[in-house]
Structure formats: C-alpha cells, structure tokens
Amino acid sequence: MVIKNTYTISEAAEILQKNPETLRRWDNEGKLTAVREPMSNYRVYQKEDLEIFPEFQKFLNAAPVDNFEIPNQDFSVVELFAGAGGLAIGLEKAGLKCTALNEIDKWACQTLRTNRPKWNVIEGDITDQSFKRFRGKVNVVTGGFPCQAFSYAGKKLGLNDARGTLFYEFARVVKEIMPDICIGENVRGLISHDNGKTIEGMVSILDEIGYRVATPIQVLKAINYNVPQKRERLILVGVRKDLGADYKYPRPTDEIFTLKDALKKGRLYDKNVPKSEGVKYPKRKKEILEMVPPKGYWRDLPLDIQKEYMLKSFYLGGGKTGMARRIGWDEPCLTLTCSPAQKQTERCHPEETRPFKVREYARIQTFPDEWKFAGSVNQQYKQIGNAVPVNLAKEIGHSIISFLNKIYR
Image (tube, rainbow, N blue to C red; front, side, top):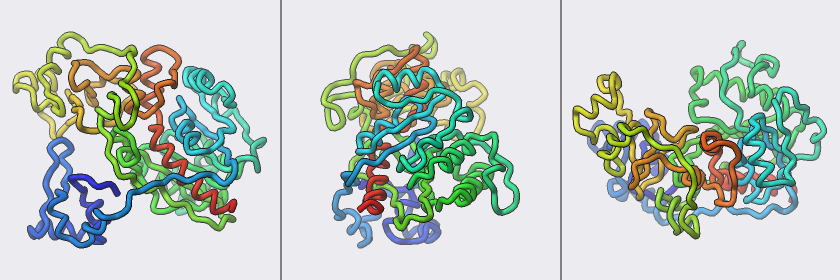
C-alpha cells in the first residue's frame, strides 16, 4: 500500500484491519467521515482523518517496499497476444528470458522484430499455432487475452465449452506447454463480466487442465507500480498443482509518479520526452479545450459551451469526468486509450491544447525512449494504448521470479 493523501474505503479497511461495512457504518454515524473526490466522485478518507488510528501509524512507519529479486537461474517465457511488447519488456527487465511471442497484428510484430531482432516472433492467428514444441522447456506462459463471454454450463465449465474464445486459446497453449506458472492479463471489468460467471468459468478451466488460481484474484493499479498513469489491470495467475510454492502478487511500491515525471527530466527519465508526431484537434474543439484549465474538464466550461460540447450527454446523469479533460502536471495521467482524442476519454496536454504525441504516450506507459513503433501514427497510438505498462510488467516479473526461485532453490 502506498502512502498518499486520500484512501478509498477498501484501502482504509485493509490498513485499519476493519471490515469495509464497519467503515461505512462509521461514516453514516459520523464517527469517520468520507468525502467525495471532485474528479472521480469516489468516497475517500483524508490521510489526516486516519492518523488517529494506531494501525495507520504503523502503516506510515512501515519499511519501503521493494519487489526486486534476482533469478537464481535462467527462467523462460512464452508470451501470447504480445502486442507491441510492454509486458515482454517489463519481464525482460525483471530478468526473465523471452523464448517466443505470438501476435496477429503485423505492425506490432514489426515493432517487436525491429527492437529485438533475436526474439522469436511468431506472427499469425493463435488458432493456427501449435506450441507443443515448448513443452517442458518454458517456465512461464503469459497473455493479455481479450475478454469474451462463453456459455456457462452448470457449476463446472470445461475447456471445450470455451471453444471459439481467445481464453480457450490461452488455456490450450498452457495445456500444451504445462509451464510452472501462467499469467493472464485483462481489464478490471473481467471480475464482474456476466455477473462473475466469465471469471468463474476461467478458474474452472484452469483447474481442469491442472492449475490452481492464486486467490483473491487481484486488480493491480499501475500508479502503485512506478507508472504515471491511473491504469488498472486484472492479473489472473495459475500455478501448476504439483508444485509446492504459492504465488504472491507484487507489493505496491512507495512513490506515486505524475505526468511531469513522465514527460520531464527527473525521477523516471534522465531527459525530457523526445519530439515526435501526433494528431491534432479540429479547430472548434481546440477553441473549446483552450478554456479548460489543467486538471479541469467539461464542467469548467461556460454553461452555453458545456451544452454545445456535450450535446445530449449534458442532460444525462453521471460525472463524465473524462470529457474535455485536461491533465495536470502534478497528477498521474488518466488511462490512455488506443486513440488520443476520443470525446469520452479526452486526455489533453496540460499546457498546449493538443492530444499527447506518440513519444509522450509511450512515456506515460513507461516504454523506454529507444523502443521504436512501426506503422502509421494511428497504428503507433493503438499499439501503445493497448500495452501493459512496462514498469507494472517489471514488478509482476519480479513476483514471478520470487515464485520460481522457491521452486528451483
């Protein structure tokens, strides 16, 4: 857990070792009052309100977190749905060796080959590929499979019931290779997808092919892992049942990085962000966004401009805090998307009225500056926006090495 100024109910409950319902009751009774964050509208507790608790003081005085661990031998990875390499670079930085990567997008494959000519990039549809040749030779299989629903038959879902989905292909490859551990990565919404039946089915399938899932399944917040971005990713971990070790998720680190850290010389990078190409706003949109201050959004516009910009959305409920949103230098960026100028998820530069450029996008995702992206500007945005942040992947990599070191002492 990272020391910061505000804490969600679930974070406060974990630190104080209380049930979240207890905190909600205290809130209703006025004993410990939560406030609403202006942007997210989430109910949070202020740091100073929690400092009266001994448990919180113990948390403040805890030693800094460091997930770093050196592998005690070479450990290898096969990555599926590899994209532009965010996860692969992070695992490599942690000390894992890349045996092979599979990806269907030709531009992403070109990106991988350009930057790592020695990597074994298997280009093509995963459904056409066999990975049996890697059986017994690979420690880890990873993959950011897209979330798809599948029919849930009774209490136990079998592998065959998931045919036609990309999770089936992920599980099939795991079954072909039988690594020590498999890591699935997805959006946080997978937890509640189809009322939880989708994730329940995935757990059932992994159980069928010989893997127990590390529980509780966690959604990792990138800002807690040296990433200047409020991105959240669900990490599903399966451990082969014949192994005696348990997997532990990486612990959150102690610093929160901001947009300034991403784009300026400082704590994350030793120089300012390199110049690069980027898209522009249409004339009228730029005129409107000129009126939005850093850390502001559509509600900071004059009322008549709000109605012009929001159209029918102006009269609907909800905060819609991503619309006409300008990021501030002193905050982490909101989650990047595959397109830098989508109306629902605007991410405007704090000083210049424009979307973030390609290298700025890459910095916010913690890609190294030397990592080149293939294809058109739009293709590059897509590759970066789809990626796992490199620094988050690195911390996951250290947690994998910690697990493997227990097995191969």
